[in-house]
Structure formats: C-alpha cells, structure tokens
Amino acid sequence: MWRVLPEFCQRHRKYERMGLKDLCQYVHSLYAKHDVARLTTEMYLSDLMPALKPSDAYAQIAHRNTERVPIDALEGRITTSLVTPYPPGIPLLIPGEVFNRKIVDYLKFSRDFNTQCPGFESDVHGLVEEKDEKGVTHYFADCVKTSL
Image (cartoon, rainbow, N blue to C red; front, side):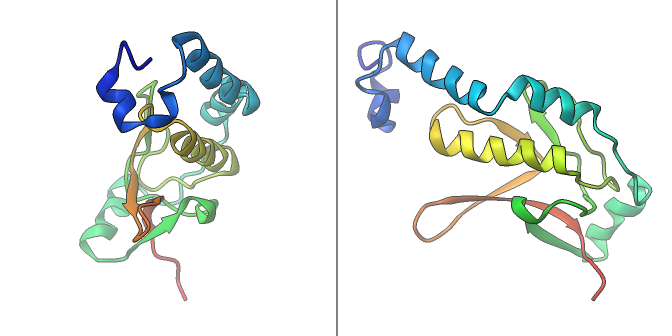
C-alpha cells in the first residue's frame, strides 16, 4: 500500500505493510464478523416507531429541549434529525422516530469499524463526532430531552 498511497499510509501507519489483498481481506473479515449484510437488512426492515410529528421533533431544537446522547444509550430515544448511513445514503430515521435495537446495533458496528479502519470511516449523517482530550472519537445523536 505504501507504494501506491504513500501519503495515506503516512497518516495511517497500520496500512504500511499491507498489500491491497491484505487490506481487502481485513475489511471483509470485519464485515463478515459483524454480518453487516444481515445487520443492514434488518435495520432497514425493522419496525420504526414514530413518537412525534417530524415538525414537532425538529422544533425541539429551537425550544432547546434536546440533548446529545451517546450511541450506547440511544435505544428508545427520539431523534430530532435525519439519520442517514452512507452508503447507501437512504434515510433510516426522520425526526420524531425512535431509535430501536437494530439501529443502535448498526451504529455500534459503524463506530467500531471507524476505530479499527481509520481512513475508511463510514459516514452516518445525523451522528455527531466529538474527540475527547486523548483524541478518542465519541459518537452521539441529538434527541428530544426526556422528562425528569
């Protein structure tokens, strides 16, 4: 890889000694380990539950009635934004819908993949990335605040 993509390998040292075949096998093994074909199919076919009208959920932003929720705590929470994984670029949730277990499982996979394959990160529109003081990226979604 270092001969073909020297700048990329300079930024991501883990790929310096990999060939293209090695890289493809590595990515494939991660996809197979997490059964991504099944995971994404189940995610898009899962029962989506609307909790609010999209306009009401989105309006929560203007009313400052939102909170940033880590991926691990998203199940059962109501999103204020579109959640769209790329690829395929098909909206998964619209404002006012509830995160279910299948969606959270996919977002956990995406987070783990991004950690294990720097430089090949997946993109999920609607997730917020924040780096902590150690440079570790954490992922959140903006949700309607829960009542106390």
